[in-house]
Amino acid sequence: MDRFEQVFNQYKSQANQDEVQAEIAEDMNPNQEKIVAVRRNDDGDLIAFQTESGRQLDYLQALSEAKEGKLAHVDVFHKYGRDILRSEPDGNKENNLDSLPEF
Image (cartoon, rainbow, N blue to C red):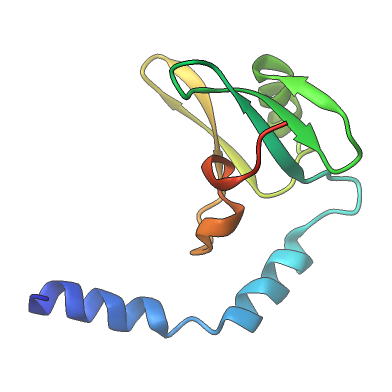
């Protein structure tokens, strides 16, 4: 491991995971739903999302709800000429959209 990677790993390890989870819980609005599962197409692209209440949203519905602040822990950013849904970067790979189970 070179010194740059070593310093970066040291920086990342400074985060207290309990503190991170507490901040995430604080940031969550009680009116927001978490995405708990995803559906992919044959190319592996995320095409639909399931919320903790069981609602199933197509990609455009999820984008719209994320922009309205109705979905927790996701961001919308603009790239490649379109809006893209992604997990909030919180250092926890387990809750990334790509890591969620499929429905």
